Length: 346
Image 1 (cartoon, rainbow, N blue to C red):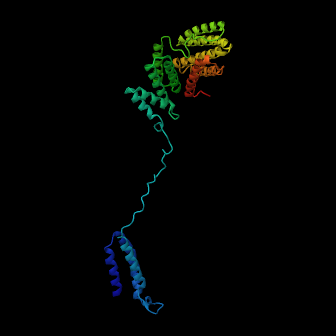
Image 2: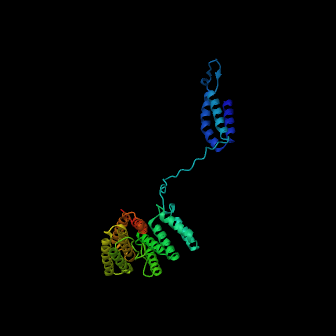
Image 3: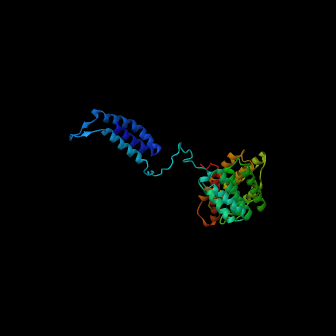
């Protein structure tokens, strides 16, 4: 009995100095030790070893040793595992989602700041970059086109610059047809262009430009058609009946240019271009004045304009017609830009 108590007291005294974690281990171990010591006290507990010796309380001794190892091991500094990145408890719903801030849209703010600070060159470059970006939202592209048009109309009063300004506002209107801010901006740019050009601007070579090498009768008919072109272009309808009158006047003049185009050569190229420009300007006028009501008809006219521009470019390759061909190429691109912005270029 003395030996058993003595061993029990040793184990108890040692583990009381350990941590609470060790106390948990000992609390389970002591009960096992007590039983083992009891066995050591009984006669049957003294078993013969293979060499013939006695093993008194061997189970208790082994248990004490295990307890000592368990207790002392808690004092050893543990090596922390490599820190692993925390995993979210739920899936990140934003993964794979992009917003307007991921594309070219933030550059619009930089462009506006450059414009307000007076750096028009930087503003123009920034607005153009936004407009050309493939992933820019339509509303942002519309504002970029409008700002570019305002810059063109304000800085450069040349006919080419004014035409470009009109094409840009047409593109803005096609991109955001229901946006009041775009509509107001379009109307203001149009008023600026009209004021800068007097009776309004005309596309292509100056009206009355001679056609070298054509028959005198063809030249006379062409000159008369050019005078009518000025009158039709200057007519800007606002009411429904005025729109119909503008359409009728356009179709009448188109038929006259068609007859001229049948003579071939430079007459075909020049007359084909004029027909395209008539439909082009009619389309823009309808987009400007009655965006919602006449949008479909305006886009149909614009598609017809591209057909005639291409017909003009398909004419004979002659040096005298280079000016007309250049105008056709330029206005074809701008018409296609407006159609693409409106989603109607198919």
